[in-house]
Image 1 (cartoon, rainbow, N blue to C red):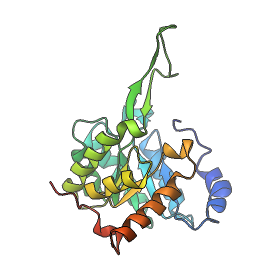
Image 2: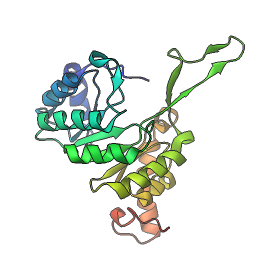
Image 3: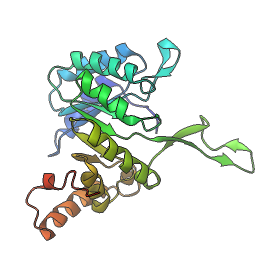
Length: 234
């Protein structure tokens, strides 16, 4: 999938009006290759109606400073979060964290200290596949992002650890395809969840997850889904 997109201006003029016709909130994922990219796009989107929140994808390489990633050092994560926080004064700011780090809690704390309103845990894991007949990588860039059910147990553990390390909300991401999956993340401490890969093979996945959560609450006589959050007993 990568970071291909039509750009912020075309998104606002062509895509956002159509999204506004649905009765759901729009969270815009922001990517950039330099610190100024993040700041400029964030400042531009901050003035646009119809956006509920911004989510920084900090897994992109910083091409102006040796190709490093903003998600490899908590200090760089703090820097990009703080700069975009200053650029966005109206919208809630989320930061989507990479799992490809030593201790994700350090990065979550850096985001919290820099002014983020929430962290999304987690982005894709770095993986690869090899064609044994051709002895060549199956992916064009050799390695790529692994997502879907395969990463769920590890993502769940990272959500649980992060939720105990910060006070800001954690958004659970990684392999969620059913209401039961979503409930696991909520019990681990996530205050919201994202459905990604499942949408590609089941376009109704998100609606089914939402309906399943409502049914779970009815059958367990739960009046508020927030009562489930952090309910894991260990």
